[in-house]
Amino acid sequence: MMARLKQINPVFLVLALLFVAIAILSPYFLQPAGYMNFLKRAAPIAILAVGQLYVINSGGFDLSAGALVTLTVIGSSILLDGDASATWWVILAMLGVGVIVGAVNALVVSWLKVPSIIATLGMMITLSGIALTWSGGAPRGYLPENFRFFGRYLIKDLPLIKILPVAVIVMVVVCVAMWWLMHRTNYGKRLIAMGDNPKAALLAGVPLTETRIVAFVMSSVSAVLAGILLGGFAGVSTDVGVGLELQAITAAVIGGAQLLGGRGTVGATIAGALVLQAMFTLLNILGFPKPIRDVVQGLILISAVVIAGYRRRRSGG
Amino acid sequence: MNIPRPKNLAALAPFLLLLAAIAVYVSVAIATGQTQYLTAENLLGLLGRSIALGITAIGQTFAILIASIDLSVANLISVSAVLASSIMSGDPSMMLPAIAAVLAVGVVVGLINGLVITQFEVNPLIATLGMALILQGLLSATFNNFAGEVPEEFQVFAYGQVGGISISLIFLIALTVAAWVFLRFTRAGSNIYSVGGNPDASKLAGMRTTRVVIMAHVICSVCATIAGLYLASRLRSGAPWIGRDGVYDLESIAVVVIGGTALSGGRGGVWGTLMGVMIFSLIDSIFNIAGVDAFAKQILRGVIIVAAVAVYAVRSRRIEA
Image 1 (cartoon, rainbow over the protein chains, first blue to last red):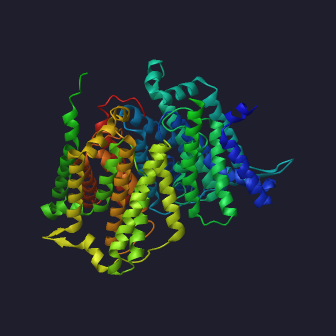
Image 2: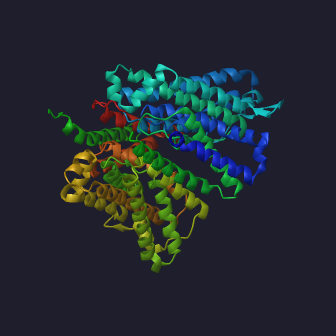
Image 3: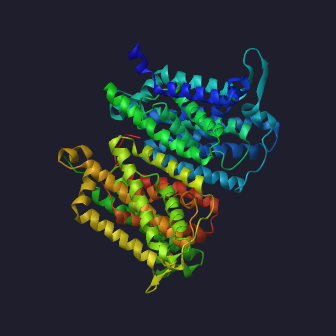
């Protein structure tokens, strides 16, 4: 019994404790409107974190995700400018941009042998340059209602849970698909093998370049999806994506993902994203000024890695 | 063991990149008829515009040489500038206490970074990223605008000149020489290369590797605080966003890598870093002379960083990410 308990990832325990603390301090969060709103706000960061996990498990980083979120929001609003009939084309085009960005990141890493931190840093600078050039430095255009549907709309009058934000449905669908690919397919096994030991994986016949392309494309596409949700409920601004890549990496690390390869699971990463969001909510309820969020994020980031390392050494793996 | 030949080429690469950048600079200046940019004074002035980046990057070279990295330098620069200007508050007699306090903060931050990395075995990216978030949060919670001001006497650091050359430029070059002498001629310096090149072998050879890692991080953080002092002197006051706005964390890493220091540690040096800084400011000037739009400049910058790193990386047969 105790042995089994010890195997449970502590992130779930931390998450439960945070939920209890939030519920005691603010009973509003026990009502459907309260917790559904919480999940809606957590949806973009959860999706981003799971996408980032693919790259982390491959042994790299994707620092360009936040800039891609900004580009998605800015680009969609300029292209659409309130024209509801173009929404589907623009969403498809943005997903296409995501695929291209991910593929370029992966090819720069694979072919030019540039470390992923520098390759995606260059991509981050380039993408925010494109977003600023395109918009002229200030948000332009306007997102039509059917684009904002995904981030903002609430399905009402449901039995039991009463309301259900569309963003939560998107999060569940995307995360289940990403979980399936990571944990139930041969691709997922190849990805983790490559992150653990690229040379061994190569000798065992893993196509490194292809595996890496898929991993970076998953991260970029998840950034586009997160951008669509954020554009829906947060509106258009030029700094919407700033720092999100770091929050995504933090969430994955809180969930126990090991930097430079292997080990991370999708479930624990989602829990990590929820821990981060719950922590921000808690600080908000307690009335701390916003900058304190950064301090707390920094502290839990370091302690999560310390705890994960301690657990790993004790389990001898 | 056959040792690959391109070792000499790797040492030469930053110099070749610098020559290429100068060639582009000269031809753009001639092509656009702006030959007034072609004086030696102007070329030296290029470096003068990147003093803060240069000082930070010299420190970052130490962190990268031991196969670590420091993402907290930008926020440490802000902390240092704000702290310096609010302790001084325009009073010349407070200059020394302020400088001492700021340098002490640098030592403490570097010690914490080094201890977290060595004692808790936290990945340096995460450890220093966490430190960056903590510093920025504490700073923004306390200050939200320009704080204090530096006295006239302290502005000499940024604006003073000796024999027609600015003091800050002399300081940067002196710092580079000191760092080079330290790395090249002292036991501690060669330990840095050993630990960066092969930590396990260094440990087996009896080196106290954790001390070397901590020392490199202290040097890196102290350099960042000096850059903060310089910026406070130049801006006449410190603000909590100056480090972040200058993107000194990522830019210092980029110039170190462009200067030929390997991210995997153990290879490179400070002269390459100085050339990296010059390449960066040359690129900036080329864009200015050619009249490239500020945002388009950023796009090209991203591409150039990746391309420059690719120049080194493509020859190695690495398969890791």
